[in-house]
Length: 60
Image 1 (cartoon, rainbow, N blue to C red):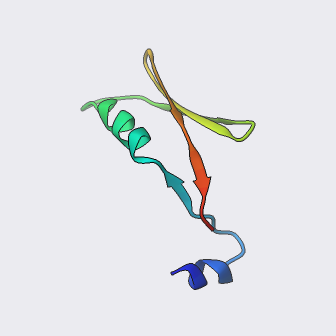
Image 2: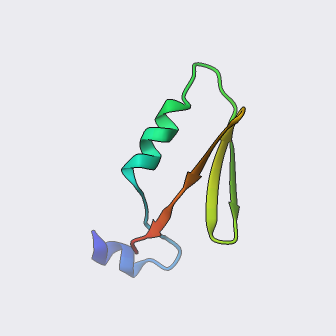
């Protein structure tokens, strides 16, 4: 798979750590509105009063 990604010019593979995935899963509701903010190399998911910082690691 890495070689297939390496051949493309406009694809990035991003890893989100498991603690962040668990925190995001805790935000899920039947009806929900979320905002995703990326600024200065960091990201946050905002849902109501909850803010989850998202650590992004570029793999390829």
